[in-house]
Amino acid sequence: MKVNIRQLFFPALMAASLVVMQGCLATRDWVQERLDPVAGRVSQSEQRLNQAEGQMGSLGGRMTGAEGMLGQMDGRIGQVDAKTERALSALANLRLERRFVIDMKEGANFSFNSSNLPTQAKKEIDGFISDLKGDAAGMDGAMFLVAGHTDNVGSEDYNYELGKKRADAVSRYLITQKKMDPLRVVTVSYGENAPMVENSSAQGRGKNRRVEILLYRDGITSSAAASSATPAAEPRAALPPQQPAGERLSQR
Image 1: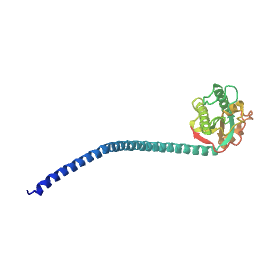
Image 2: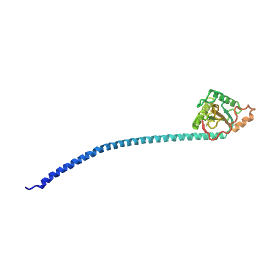
Image 3: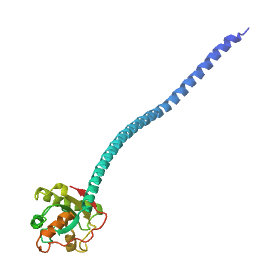
């Protein structure tokens, strides 16, 4: 009997192909089962990355806004510095005539951590202005430097701001109640840097919480007043010692 090799070979080849194809399909399914979770994690990572990029973009916008605000603040500081320079130039051409310190009577000085102007302090200021108006020169050519002081409790920066608030309180009273020209009232804060006495006791710290009013006047007005006036009584406050350098000024 003659055997047809071709008839035997092709069925065997087809059977082998089916086995191989089934194996490939099984392998592909196995690989796909393991790739799907990885693809899911990659997708989640991409979403997180997109969210992070969005947050970074938002942060960049905020930083740009903050830079703009800083630029505006720098501009305002520059304006204040210009006013300070003008105030210093004006005072440099004037003569220091007298200094008034709010008397350390009970109720006249500033309370701890407060910039509210006490009623007794207002009375002290009223008396000072009344005496000044009674002088021969009166208010002619007068410029007032209002200096705020604190004790040494708290940080130096905080005390500077508190001293300025106290000086501002007195300046507002001079301008609104005593009708002083705002262009002739300059405020300065020494903070804790110019104490009258040691801060080692509660009494000493109380004395250092104060505001001083320094009266400056041009030399021509002062000389004319001195030549025409009769001898005056002793001033209520002595002329000040040299004030420490480095104070920060602001013009009302």
